[in-house]
Image (cartoon, rainbow, N blue to C red; front, side, top):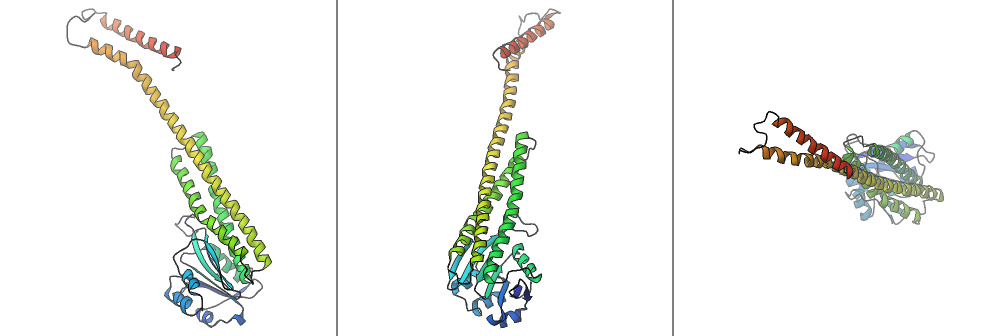
Length: 323
């Protein structure tokens, strides 16, 4: 990325390819040259100045392109379309569910997109344009971007679903002592992803229903399929959340059962030795008259009495089905 905030700039050739542009060429661009796509870092001063002063945009649009507000949405402004979408975070050292936003203004002949953190889906479109496999029009650009974002989200959700399935198996086997933290992590991922996907589905649905003249029937059909995929992903996230909740409740139940079993064992041990402690305490008092104190068989007799008491208690507990 250049210091002026320019990340990607292409003139679409209408056949899937694109000609890269420099910042000077971007500023000199006219609609007669073809469809323009400019991707900027919205926190770069030169990029902000260009958006606000040289693009002849509605103030609502220019502010949205440089705003920190990133909730997914879409809005038709005149003959253009303003969007904010979210994609999976593939940046090194960051969590996938910490989704990255991209802001987009699309007109028939010009597309301006902005971001702060790198988004792999946008980079993929740039690579496709360089290879001659990219979008040819503004409408196709929106459709392709929405499809790539959704595909990457679906892949991330599939990974979370596999993790949830493994955790469910571990809960059944009760083979891992760190299950509670892992289940909580799964629930957190599902909640964070769903937080953005529900409004993103609404935003794409609104795009499909807007009367934008340059958004063709083919683009709307592809958007419809992308919306259906998003709905399925949201349903999968709901299912993952519910499964994680059930697994967590099952784990709590198993832990409670294990704790009760241990407490039960301790209670039995305490119950068995309580009368023995009373007996030995009684015989250990320093007063005269203790039976057998002067007899060589006294200790043996006391030992037999203690053993008889233990066996009697065990017999009684078994008869009452306590053990």
